Image 1 (cartoon, rainbow, N blue to C red):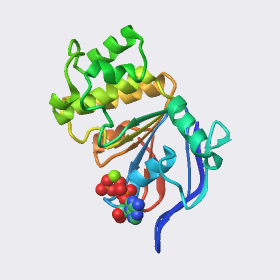
Image 2 (tube, rainbow, N blue to C red; image 1 turned 180 degrees about the horizontal axis):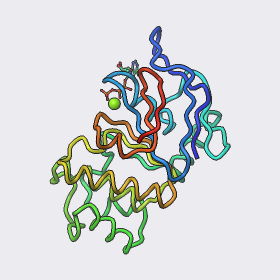
Image 3 (cartoon, rainbow, N blue to C red; image 1 turned 90 degrees about the horizontal axis):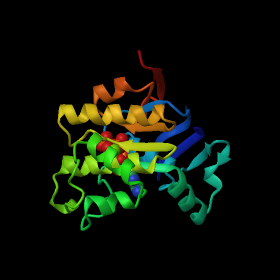
Length: 210
Ligand SMILES: Nc1ncnc2c1ncn2[C@@H]1O[C@H](COP(=O)(O)OP(=O)(O)OP(=O)(O)O)[C@@H](O)[C@H]1O
Ligand SMILES: [Mg+2]
């Protein structure tokens, strides 16, 4: 479970969001919405300990992450975090298989993940030869192999057609059901509606879906 307490982020004079209190339990999905530039990615980066908030705390299973030093942050990311970010963060010159090995070497799990994202049997292909949408799906497969307890996804359906977008949503839901908390920044109504709660980063309103 991840929780923010009065989390605030400013750049100079400009405050993106102030005193944000959010809680995402295991099994739940939270959507972050709001206009471009409202601070969705920045909030994800703070939750992923890639950026420092200006104030407030982030707690993970009761542990205060905002107190961690560089080493502690790195260990937390390695042990608990799964990113699905806009640049995919793949090793471009490596094969699909090599990218999955970084997350875990269970062959059965790797095969199942590749099948799930529609890339079965393509382990040996180089990532830089693949399309944007295919790379996005490799990043998703890698997440399934890692099985993190917290998934942070930034526009995970951005480069995808409708069918693959649906597949991403269903996979994130399945990962939540299997024991992780999911936070996803999105402009897509289908993604938003698939979540349990929606936080508008601009108005700072939290709503329950459905
Ligand atoms: N390091 C930084 N220094 C100054 N301003 C920054 C920095 N990082 C982000 N910003 C600003 O913070 C604002 C929020 O950016 P962010 O990327 O979080 O928005 P977003 O809601 O994800 O937008 P989009 O929907 O377009 O992805 C932007 O105006 C951006 O320019
Ligand atoms: Mg963004």
